[in-house]
Image 1 (cartoon, rainbow, N blue to C red):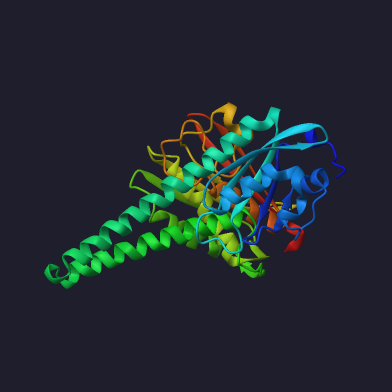
Image 2: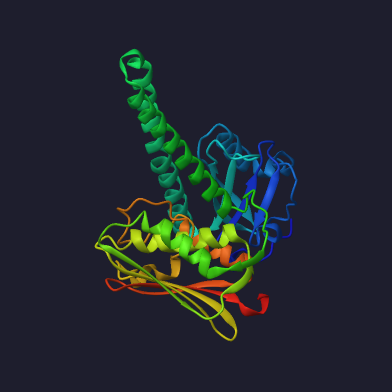
Length: 328
């Protein structure tokens, strides 16, 4: 192998499928390792016995760990088993230089915590409800049975949504990008209506539209992007307040702004907002996967746009999507 400068990246990340073959190499992982997509991890040889042991552990559902030496530098490795429901994969391997290991440990910890809590809670509800149906089937009225079955369906849908979110972040979505002529004002009104159902009486949602908002975009991705931003604003405004959705056309871009008067983001957390599984330090008690903003960013980028934000702790946040006007 002829590795490049490993210090040029915060982490080297790659993934394996169920056959132990490389399915993705993120960042500078390909150059740093010299490996190729489709290569079997077993073909790397005895020099990487520690890596092979970590892979074997992950294939059994455990978190594997090892040290890997590249260009006389030691990288700490963690291989995280993917939860059931992922196609063609059993783990995501992250390699990091010592100076970045704490960041990798934190990301790994956040991932495992999210999987543990966000998946376990629905499974507990499903398990408990199924037990009640089995135990008291003959004694339950039809209305009560329907209530229990509806509860199970809701939790299954919730689990399915969580799996979809993680897959989207890792580029495994089944959705095919399909832009078509749209009126974004109609999408905004529909998204605001859905978000209203998730708000409380203390929240006041407002929509402001300026200019012609016809745009060739993917309706599913743009609607989901708007929902992620609106639900995020609602969630992080526990005391309520105004939430403003403003769409306007500038000379160079079509702008979508979502502003709230909520918790805001601590200054120390600002550089890491949007990283997968990251939660701001003043909102760790709130439920969530830490993936919504990352997904919204990915959807904006798929349209050739961007997502930026400004925030002051205790005063609220403003998220701004800019879509290139040249597409319209």
